[in-house]
Amino acid sequence: MDQTTVTAPKSPWGSVPAAPPACSLSEVMSEELAKQLDEENNLFPGAADPELELPLEDATDTDSDLMLAQMLQMQFDREFDDQLKREEKKFNGDSKVSISFENYRMVHPYEDSDSSEDEVDWQDTRHDPYRAEKPQVTPKKGFVGKGKNITTKHDEVMCGRKNTARMDNFAPEVQVGDGLGMDLKLSNQVFNSLKQHVHSEQRRSARLHEKKEHSTAEQAVDPRTRLLMYKMVNAGVLENINGCISTGKESVVFHADGGSLEEEPVPSEVVLKVFKTTLNEFRNRDRYIKDDYRFKERFSKLNPRKIIRLWAEKEMHNLSRLQRAGIPCPEVVLLKKHILVLSFIGADHIPAPKLKDAILSEDDLSAAYGQVLTMMKTMFSECNLVHADLSEYNMLWHHDKVWLIDVSQSVEPTHPHGLEFLFRDCRNVATFFRRRGVAEALSQFHLFNAVTGLELNVDDDDEAGFMAQIVALEKRNEDHVQKRGKKTFPVNCEEDDPPFKHDSDD
Image (cartoon, rainbow, N blue to C red; front, side, top):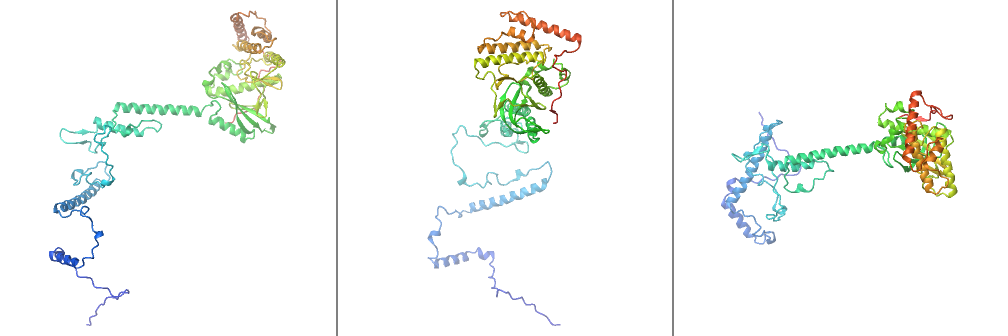
């Protein structure tokens, strides 16, 4: 049988040089080889560059066999610790209870640090009184030490440091000071007190924020009211809302440009009277509404927030009575929950001045007093209403006429305190016009008799006696009404006011 020989394929890069013969370990470590290499270096004295030679003080001292042995042992111990960590991780796995092999480590953690001496800021703090000690970390085992020197996780110093570190978890708005940079120790009692204080402050802040978001404050509205105003603009009732022009104890007034409402023209300039939803702004509202027969049945069934809508509806009905009687007052355009849209009393975005701010001559003051007296009589006799808050602050001077505003608190004379409210109005009117020098201005007592048509005994020095007569008259009227079981109305006042444009959609 022929024997075939296998030849190695030729390399495309040419012939491959033969590898040099391998040297054994004994040849490398032999002294003869070292001497031979030393002699070869001496044959070429200029080959060595003196600039490349390291200075003797910078050269690592490797002549000591002890140092070489320590370096090798350190490297061996590190490799052993790495293998130990792998074994520990493999042994524990995903178990919740883990076993540590730290006691079998060969290299101390601080000795195994890779930080160099150049990176350390060498500042002598041995005599620094504010020098903080290195914080101690609670071991996983729960205690450290042996024998009698056992330190558990309940140690006072350890707990104090841990409580100080946990202050970082407090709310950002809580200022805990700069003590975190020191070795500060907080006891459990102090930490629990701080934690409870932080939680109470967060709850208080949340309540204040919620109250602000759901209330109509001065020159500001809550999101719900703002949404209602946006809907009016989107529906075309208003072209735009310009800004706040007046604030009071019960409402905020905004100026706006009118649009159209169900193919009916809206005045070119209107005002939005937004009744405040904060009940503490006007706590005595129920005094004017709970005894009004028109809302008495509904008052007891509504919550305080819905009473605000009832308050806006009350002013709408009162204004409708004044309009029918021919008394100058704003015209009602639309009622949307607690927002009442009225015609604007003024011109070119400038509201008419209040009577107290208007600059009037003597003739104008006399004419204004006569108009106020006529309006008070008409309100009492024809509209069956008492303003209940009439003063120079709720009367405007526009086009040489006095205009009445803010009639949401107006009540009927048969109200249990209606005549008392009327006497207070007479006092405010008489005081203002007499102070302005109107000669024909009546006193508060004669003005009350002129408006009501009553003939109560008048003594200018005895206001308490006059008030006693009014209270007695109110008591008789109340008893008379309870016996008859119904109300009496003037000629031009209907029992039920006609329905107005009241949009009740949310």
